Amino acid sequence: FIGGEGTGGLLEETEAGVYEPFDGPGPYEGPTEACRVCASGSAGVAEAFKALEGMGCTVNVLGGAGNKVLRILTGEYDVALFSDTTSLWDTAATQACLEAAGGKMTDFFGQELNHEPPRTSSGLVNARGVLATRAGVDHSAVVAAIQSEAITRRFSTFVSPPHCTAALTSEYHQPTYVCVTGPLAAGASGVNYCVCAACAVKCHAGCDVMYVGDLESGCDCPSQGCCKIKKQAEMAKATFEELGGALPTAGVENGAPKMDAFAAFSLSNVPPTLLDSCTNLVKDTKETFFLPYPFSPRTDMEQLAASVFEFHTRHLGSIPPNSGAEFWCQVKPPSAPKSVDLHYDKDEHLSEAFALGSFPLLSTVTYLTGGNVGTVIFEHAYREDEAAPIPECRVSYPEVGKHIVFDGELLHCAPDEPEFKEFWGRRNDEETRVTFLVNVWVGGRPAVEELSEEERSGMGGPGGPPLEFNQISEAQVVEVGESNLAGEGIQLPFVMEDDGDGGEAGLVLAMPSLPGKATCSNVIFRFEEGFQPMLVHVGDEEDDGIDGIDEEDEEDDSMHIDA
Image (cartoon, rainbow, N blue to C red; front, side):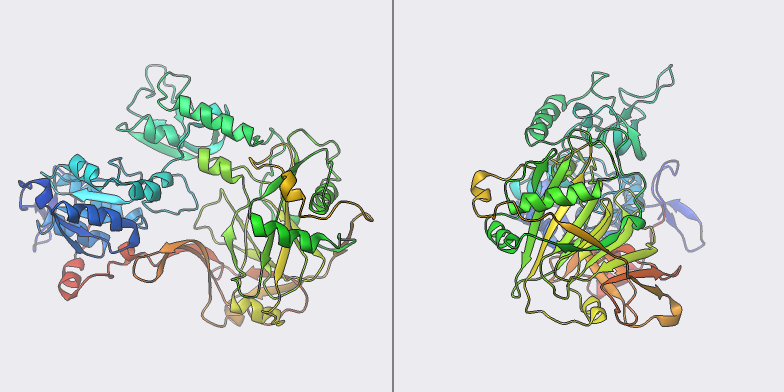
């Protein structure tokens, strides 16, 4: 099939190799409750599946994005539900063909699909689910039928951020859109107004909105009088500021993330009470806390956080307002999983409320115990292309009193992964892994609170000799390529969820196996071209067109759709 703008409808390839108008089954003429529905078998669409089945629709599980649309085009089904892991490339051509035949495809909330979204950690997927209907089906009635609290909770937060960024900043590095046909379309003046991701979806729904990139820009929607979410955004700004949040001051951002910011130290005079303080704190909370500069530490944790900040900013001279140390601890007992999955350190509140990325200048880890689960830092930043190859990673294995620092925008994790532990060669799964982490924020701070008096009561006090940082210069360099490739490779989870079939789907970092053995606790892995780690999607049953398809389905799914 071929469909899209300028085709004059859906075209079908004949045996002679020419394309002619498709003579399909025609529009659906029955009531909504009599529709025949095919749906993904993943957990993400279970609630919508149940809702349509409950109103009388016949619902069957069917795999493959193209397979579902083909069954609608040929009249076997009237409605299709796709999971929230369906890749964007699986709906681009299928949407064009379906709509050329008079059908419709949107997300679960009736909003247009966005095939040029901002590049976020959710990956290049239709994160709000996909609903497809045959010509003649009341699409809005199906949208209304599948709405529920569970659907809203699962899907609605994955689209654009809920709040207009203009309430918070006049210009910031953010996903940027241009409204081509709506109220902010370029008129006689030729001015193209920019809109943020929230306004692109909520204020300009139904307009032709084009994604232009992750750029330094501001949202013009409120200033031009067409923002529908301005009041809510102002309320969100007030919450952000009540929590102490402040965007970075111009001129103090990180610049390009770099691996050479990495350094390792051996610490002397770590407060002896710190291990107990960490253990006591994590019994009550896993939150992070902020110590504003200039410092007045009242506990051993705050004292160590202040010392880390002051050591790593000693070259800056004056410290601007809204600077300080964000700190927290992790305690992983032998009975608990020790992994910390891939992530970026950032202001989580700002990311969720406005989809703006604010990052610490530096991230640090202090190991209060040893063990065999190290920290792995990849040369990949939040704003980089998701699919960009990663030329290098650094691994820091834990030793008591060891401290590392690295660029605050880099992707990192602590994988409880056999190959990393075997490379280290010091197996000790019975030891509790305790780390104290400090993010250095300069000229901007995250929306997190300070320690409460109750939380301070379970900690040791400040005092003792000053902390000493003794640099560890030794590092092992391992070149990874065709000459020493071994094993089946490693997959580190990034954004994963249950696929509804007992497995997981999402985004992982795929990398080669590790050759050799560690000779010291700091290791640099450099990957030859063609063997570099990459972020990839796995376990996407919509993408492979196999799961949930019986023998009859497989024959039909061999058909292809071209955009």
